Length: 474
Image (cartoon, helix red, strand yellow):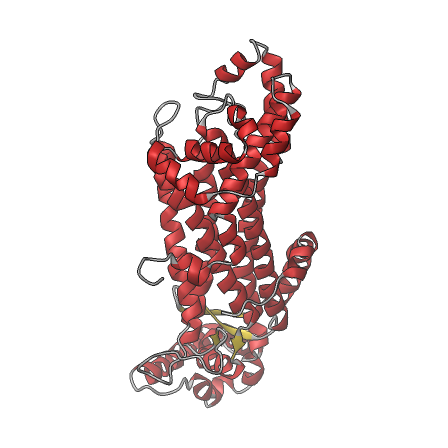
């Protein structure tokens, strides 16, 4: 059992739902569904296929003899024909009409499109659930001022809730991309060996209308309204590249937020959930490492790397088809979906249990706020009758001295004390000038507006998924 490599995406990270979606049973059952749909449509349009043959095919969609298919593949060196033979063994009456007129990509490509569409639907639900959790967090902490950063240097304050909205909005943009990709996926249809439908035209005696109708009927039977208008033997691998770019975008958003959380955990302002018996380090017992955020970053890096593989595959397809895409796609497509599923499970879990340390946040803000308040203090001193230029120079001198106290001597920021002791600022209410709420602008209101204008419609659209969603135990 432990002798061979096991994919950690299956055994450690991804959900059972996503793992089943890309499993062998689902794949090969879908192949059989496609063969049934083709036979049904061909019979409806006049080919000599009996109701008994189709019924036999229907009865054996799910009872796949995998050992038999493996034996056939070792002999035939062709996975599709191996499963044609294995299907034919249990459907002897229908053996001669299975895969009639089709090429391998009829089952492989249409199946991949079906799986990717369903995979994106699962991803959409996870995105919505994660946005929902971040929105709850943002609402709770909408007003709590915190130090904001540009260039990872202290900058004008924001609020904890507003920062969470930044993370959530990245996912909102990703969700829009996912929805767009779901809507854009079409069936490959029944296109034949090089996409010309020549084999089907032959089957229907040159009747172009019947070939067009065959494709439309098959598409409807497998759950599509439309097919790609032109293909080679495969649908354009540009489709895969676009979907992988969308999954990569989700990974990028998750990695950005997880990196922020790691930085904030290092400052002891914010932490991911940490369980009572959880061990942070095998050596340093006191550690509370942000391992879930770190795992998100690792999985995200993997997904982003897969995007380039899909792009390279799209760019290197020769003429109507080449087979160098096959082995690559068997790896890239399932693993990209599994990894995104895994990192969104982690993200949702973190967002559901983020721990905030208001006192640490307040202390860090207090250390920097006097510098940020100098413009307000200057204006208040001018309003009290002071000379603007002289006041500016005095603030500059006091600020440099306070900075030296912090940087050179490791002391605390004593700018406020210096200004309080300066007669030039005697008429200024310094305490009022340092109220953190006066420095966050419209951050709390922006949270409210974002939740009302962006999150509320999303919650309504995905209400069923949100009702089913739960905090995953990791």
